[in-house]
Image (cartoon, rainbow, N blue to C red; front, top):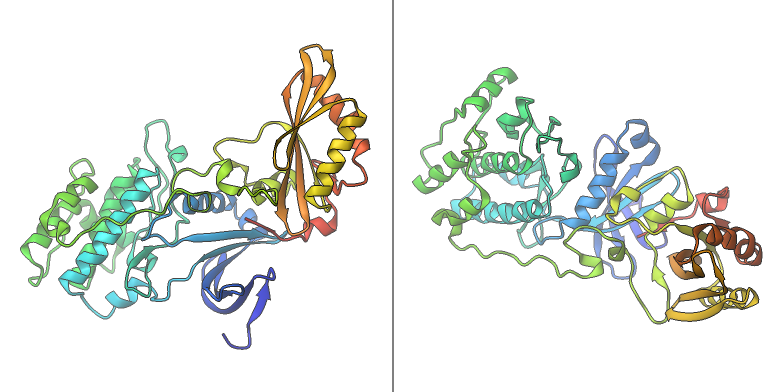
Length: 440
C-alpha cells in the first residue's frame, strides 16, 4: 500500500487512493483485526453541507443499508467525526465493468450472465422502493469471482421523493444511458427508467458500443426519443428481440422485469441469488431502530451513532434515516462503565422512593410511590454503548403525567446524576466530544 499507509479509528489501515469524485475520495483499506480488504469513502462534511448535499448523503446511507444483495456493493460501516463522514464498503477487486467493455464486445454467454445479475439486483432494489437512476458500466463492478456488483447510489431515489402525481421529476443520470421520459422533464417512473438503462447496458455488452451516440447531444436525444438504433449483425436474434423490448421510448410499453425474466434467452442458466439473511447487521428491509443495535447479556446495546450525533450535536442530523423515531425523553452521555451507571441509577431511584424493576440487561423501570394527576409516574432508563468508553443513557416516560415527568428529570434526576454525566442532550457539547469518533 506504499508510503501513504496510515491507521484510522484504530481499526483500519488506509492506503492508496482508488478514485475521487466531486465530494468524496475512495481509498483502499484493510481491517486490522481480520486482514480483510475494504474500500473507504471519505466525505468532507462542510463541503456537502455547503453544497446542500446532506440529504443526498443521508439517502445514500439509508439506501445502501436497505439493498443488501449479493450483486450490490455492501456498506459495512459508517463512521463520523466533526469534519468527515467515512463509508467503509466491500472492496470489489475486479474494477469497473466499463474497463472490460472498453476492450470490445463480450461473448454472449458472459454478457447474459452480467445482465442476469444486473436485473436480479435491480429487481431487488425496486422491491425495496429504490430506483438507482444512474445505471451504467462505470457503476457496475466485478469481484474476484467475476460477479457483478452495482455501486454508487448517490443519485438513487426513494418513495418519499415522489410528487403528488406519483412520479419523480429530478433530471439525473448519464445522457447516453438515460431514459427518454427523464429527459422530457414531465415526470417519470424510476423503475421503468432503470429498465431502459439496463437495455442500453445490455446493448453495450453485446455490441461493444452505445446504441445512441452523436457528437451533437441534441441529435443524440432525438435518437433516444424515437428509439432509433441499429443492432450489429453479430447479435443473435433472441438478444435483438429482448433489446428491442427494453429500448422502447414509451415507458408504459417497455418490458417489465417479470417480463424480462420470462424471456427464454434471459432465463438460460439463470439462478436467482439469495439476498442476505435478515439479521440486525444484514437487514434487507427498511432501516429501523433495531437494525442498529445488537443485544448482549454482558454489554449494553449498541446505540445508533447517527442518532446520537443528531441528538447531541446540532451540526449533523441524520435522524431522517429512521422510520420510527425514538420516544421523547431525556438523554445524557457518560464515560462511566455501563455497570457503574446502572448501580448509580438504582441508588438514585431508591433515594427518591421509586421502586426499581429490571426489564432486561441494562434497562430498568422506575415507578413512583405516590399517585399523580394521571396515576403513578413510571420511567424507563436504558444504557447504550455508542463508542469506546462512551455510553448513552436514555430516560422515557412509560406512564403518568408529562409535566410530572419533566419535573422528575430536571429537578430530581439531573442533580443526582451530576457526578457521572458527561453532557446532557441539548446542552453545550465540549470540544473533547466534538472530536470523538462515532461509528455504526
